[in-house]
Image 1 (cartoon, helix red, strand yellow):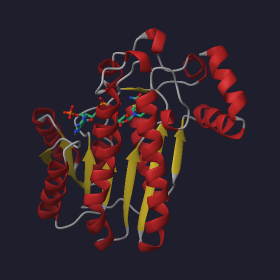
Image 2 (cartoon, protein in one colour; image 1 turned 90 degrees about the horizontal axis):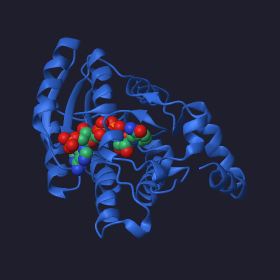
Image 3 (cartoon, helix red, strand yellow; image 1 turned 90 degrees about the vertical axis):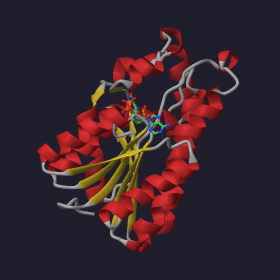
Length: 263
Ligand SMILES: NC(=O)c1ccc[n+]([C@@H]2O[C@H](COP(=O)([O-])OP(=O)(O)OC[C@H]3O[C@@H](n4cnc5c(N)ncnc54)[C@H](OP(=O)(O)O)[C@@H]3O)[C@@H](O)[C@H]2O)c1
């Protein structure tokens, strides 16, 4: 699907990092973007910036973990823009701890925001996307959904579940004019890394740190928008992460060994 001036879009997690860059790049192409996150202030600042860039930002506060708030956010967007053609389900958090040290709500919070937040966003948006096809859904998942790492059991599970959910959805809506892409970046330099408060001993795999360069939010954003225009399904980046993901998939025993001895 082409990203054209006036395109009605919704981006969750737009107040920071990758979501904010996606909103900026959409605005540079003249799109209208509903900016969804919990905190209002950064969304208001971003909306003002988008107007300068040639687009339009609509501030929509919502917690993607709450069903009614997601439904209301989608409705508010459709009411304001008269429809919806692009949804980027990007909101997420990173909680890291080995299983033995996880508090009782660790897995539940991770799944509620990262997986259920994505599925709620998609489910409420889908009737509008089908009505307005051609349209597109992007899920900002993670290479953690392809390659597990120590300390990230809940996070990896939330992203693997999101990948599979979107892969199944792509099959369901492919012939109905709705494209579906899931973007699996490696490490991206955003506030996510500070918020995740990674313990170096339970960090992202050392192997990945050695081999795979850290990405910037703007390059992840531009790859996500390219996936929309080319209707790509899975996008893994950078290329070295793609190679590691393939290695793990083709030879799981070797991939497991490699991570144990190097990570
Ligand atoms: N950074 C990385 O290394 C990396 C790598 C691979 C994948 N990812 C994925 O990329 C996505 C974006 O990450 P990022 O690096 O841009 O992180 P970030 O800078 O921390 O931004 C996260 C965004 O999500 C929003 N958010 C968090 N919880 C929310 C909730 N319950 N409801 C609504 N919005 C919520 C935050 O705003 P509020 O707090 O105001 O709600 C913020 O706008 C995430 O899904 C993450 O898992 C990140």
